[in-house]
Amino acid sequence: MSLNAGHPTPKSVRSLQVTDATLSWRDLDDAEESVSTHEIVFTIDFSTAQRPNYIVYVLREDADAQSHPFQLDLLQTDAIPAELRHGHLINGIPPHLQPTPSNKVDVIVSTKSGTGRAQSFWQAALQPLLQSASSHPVVEQYNLVVTQDAQSVRQYAKTIDGPPSAARTIILLSGDGGVADLLNGREPVPDAPLPLMALLPLGTGNALFHSLHKPCATTPGPTPLVLALRTLFLGAAANLPVFEAKFTPGSHMVAHADGSQAALQLPHRRQVSSLYGAIVASHGFHASIVYESDTPAYRAHGAKRFGMVAQELLKLSHPYKAALDVRPPSSAAASEDTFERDAHETHGYILVSMVSNLERNFTISPASRPLDGKLHLVHFGAVGGDRAMEAMMKAYDGGKHVDVKWDDGERVRYEEVGEVRIVSGEDDERWRVFCVDGTIVQVARGGGMSVARASRELLRVLVDEGARA
Image (cartoon, rainbow, N blue to C red; front, top):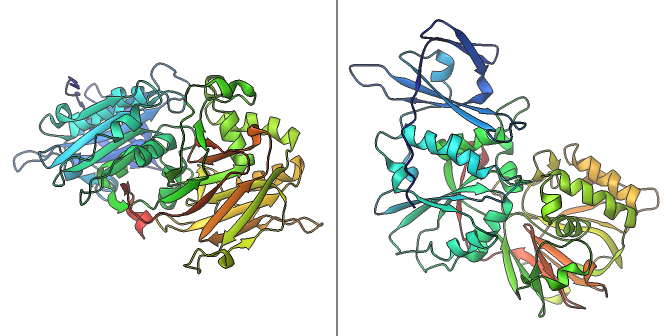
């Protein structure tokens, strides 16, 4: 797809100064302007032996501006303050963003992710940034994929494993669902290089992005999108840890549920035996929230949709009938005697996590570290709406829910695990739902899911150097 973007025009400025986290300058008419240093993406040194030349890239964001939420400023100057020299100073576009016969670069713009801001971000920020950062029009050689429906990313993923000699960078303007579609849509070719994924967090929760960037996120500090652009240019490649969720026969994926029988008439009920994931697999309260909030009406509210549906589910406080078996991480063999049966016959929350955060401020697994590849179980029984709310609110307080205990002996169970098996005992299919990175799977009566670390690598991901420490 041809991009046909004009080369963005930098604004000439002078007298740049950094004072108290503020970058100020004067334009050619001597008018003074300023931005927060947290809005600075990086500075590129275009200097030659004859002429110093720097461009400072600034991303302004306004969530209330529906039509133009993003603005990229290019500040051109012949001198920069020391603070910018010691910060994010680079010399142009990195190799993984340069399209060549041996390196393909794809941009996926997921139009329905989150509140639908991906296309605005591509047009107003990322595309002009890539155009300006390169001394020649590399962006016109990118493969641009603008999603048309919920299957677009999966369909794209089937095409990416080309000849074994070709490397590939995938710039993903999406949320966690886009990652799941890449993992599960691919048909890997033996010995082919693993595709390299760059995350631009434009979804609802963006759990994977926030978990990978937790070491470099600060408050106050750069926005997630500023951090993402820095990682896109300055990040290091790492293998993405992946788990595999296996389902019993008769299981199928569903979408756009509304908590009623309407899901029965949906055309998208594809049979499924297994899914790969990089974030979480769940049953109970968490899975039901994702399942019942996945409607166009709820999605319009962004991340708030989860809280809206959670309130309704807490009023019901449904006790999920299920058998929960846990294998510890130290046990290599998956024989029956290595599993421990949880004593609860009904459950409120069963979640297996490979990341620390489900949202920027919602820490589901405080012991998880970026790229460590460890699975942690978070579980509590059918403790009622008030207690479930108490535990969930503490997750917003740095993950303190893992220490919650109640007077009657009930508690939040939290531990590293090697494998988890869940078998549903529910008759009503509304409560027989499981979630894998936002994909909902409904199982047959007596069916269930098992979750363990995958035996293969499927993707690499760009991360901040702090994530590899």
